[in-house]
Length: 232
Image 1 (tube, one colour):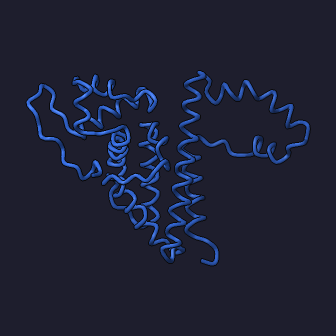
Image 2: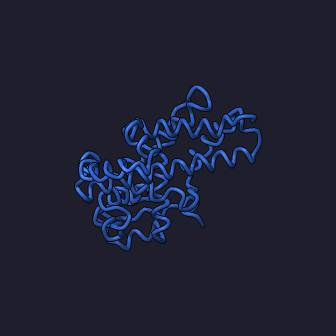
Image 3: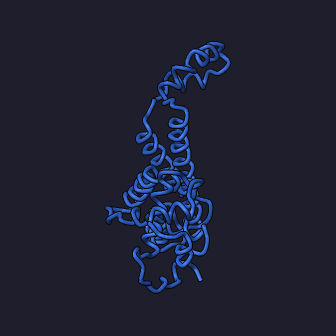
């Protein structure tokens, strides 16, 4: 039986009461600090102040634990209030998802890995699909499936790239400015050869947007492309 439908174990007389929500919250704190590779039953139990074996009354394996953690993050995304129209609804959900992923970087590692079927994940999926189904170019279920697939692919790719850049900067102690300073002279010499004219235009004349502006601009471009196709 899926963890979502399995009843919580009966409360026991113990100094520290447990439930799945409490376990998920502790696991999220551990993952936020140590990443998914550092997530272990022992660390979660220590965070809760209980013995590790008690956790197996509530989750039978790591997959169930990840499901609970992911759905707890989706609960935050699902808090989006009603927006004026389908487009505003989709944009709000996408921006909330990005904000949640930046707060819980491990969340992006699990996007697209497998379907998320918890109640809050399903609520977010329903809200997104219902909004996109109202776009003028989405005429039938096939259009809706393709549109959802393209939007989710963009979201997973954009979040993973942004979070990978953040992790790299932390691991190397080199931010974007320092990286540009270190590699700038080499890049200038290569561009001066004239062999890469289009890359040169991008580097010299292209807008250098910050992460917020980049996500907002690219999301708008993708949404325009998949919901307002010419001739649709």
